[in-house]
Structure formats: C-alpha cells, structure tokens
Image (cartoon, rainbow, N blue to C red):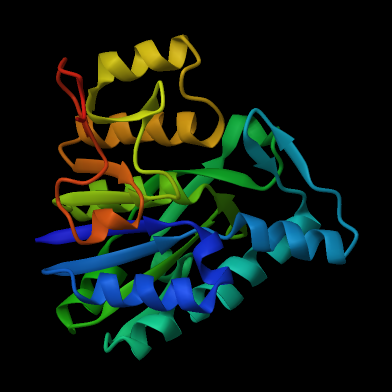
Amino acid sequence: MLTVVKVGGAVADSPSELARLARAVAAMPGERVLVHGGGAEITRWQERLELQVCWHEGRRVTTPEAMKVTAMVLSGWVNKRVAAALIGAGEAAVGVSGEDGGLMRAARREGGRLGEVGEVEDVDPRTVRALLEAGMLPVVSPVSRGPDGTPLNVNADEAAIALAVGLGAKRLLLVSDVPGILVDGSPLGRISGSGASDVLERAVVKGGMALKLRQAVDAARAGVEVRIGDRRLLADPAAGTRVVPDARTEVAS
C-alpha cells in the first residue's frame, strides 16, 4: 500500500518535533512518499533579504527574486533537513523536488497574476517509482518545472494531491496542527464533497484550511482515501477527518 504524507514546513523548525515525525513515518507500514512545505521559512528569508511578502486570497505572490529564495529554501534547506531526520530514523530517504526528472510539470496560476506560482498539470512518476522500487523513501519539495523550464512555486497540499493521484496512491494524509476539519470546535469524522461545499459557503472553514479542504475533495473524487488532521494520522488510521466523494457527513464523537 502506497501512502503519500504531506507535512507543513513548520515541523522542520523544531528538531525534536521533526525527529518525532520521522520516527512516526518510519513506523508506518507499506511504501511512503513524503511531501513538505516551508512557507514560514520562506517568509523569514524574504524578510532577511528585504523582499516584500505579498498574499492574494490565501496564496503567496512570488516574484522572480522571491522564487530564487523559495527554491533555495524548499528544495535545499528544508528538503535536506527532512530527509536527514528520516535517515536518522532508519529510512533510506532521498530528497528531490518536483523539477527533478520532470516529476511535476506546472503552468502559471491565473495566467501569471501571482507571479512565479504554479498549478500542477502533469505528473511523471518514474523518478519516485524508481526510488520506491529501490527501497527508498522519497522526500519531495513542491517546487515544480514551469513551461519554460524555470521553477514555479506550487502549494504543497496541491503537489501532494497531484502526486497521490499520479502515483495511484491508496492514501493521502494531510498533516497539519489541528485534529481535523473543525465545526463548532469539534472535528468532523467524515465529510463529503457536498458537505465541504456547505461549510465553505458558510465560511465555517477559512484560509489555508479552506484551500486544503477543496483540494482534498478533488483527490477523493479521483479515488484516493484522504484524511486531514494532526500527527496522530500517522499512527491511527481512524484519526482526523476523512474526505469522501459521497454525500455523507458525520461528526466525530
């Protein structure tokens, strides 16, 4: 069974938390692919370099100069730090980016209105499959190859979903710092596409979690089992909120 795990870049800021995550991933059965973000680290480096940090409707605007920082942070510093932690936990982890081997090809989002920000159009899974067949654990930075061969900044959740679908993964675990999709303070045990539309229209779920939920519904419709929650997802198959393509929605007790 192949599981794609997406983790936020914030976990890499804490050596102890990263070590715990690595041990949890190493204990998971079956083949695993880990996709990471790193937005907070990108912001810190942009501020150090006096580059303006801009957002539009929850998405980072990435100028050509900011793209250089993004690639350096995601495909370099964060990627290798996560891979090193997994190696320390006993895994043969290998860090790659969406650019390597043409793994993820992206187009500029909204015709370039957000700058060097992309959305994945195609996945060539050969690089990841070769690593898996060799008994290795791929650690993937979401920086992807743009139409002109230059890198584009792709949202890590979107990259994880595209990879999960492109690889034919059984499960996708979107690990965050909350126990699931929260409604009135309680996590939903299960939510469907129609249920997601309802909570989004009522603005019950906002910001980054709203984007995550929309993307998770797309993955579920493509046949991937999707769960959103905290680190307990890695050890408990029933943890978090399960996103399904049918019409049932249940609140966890």
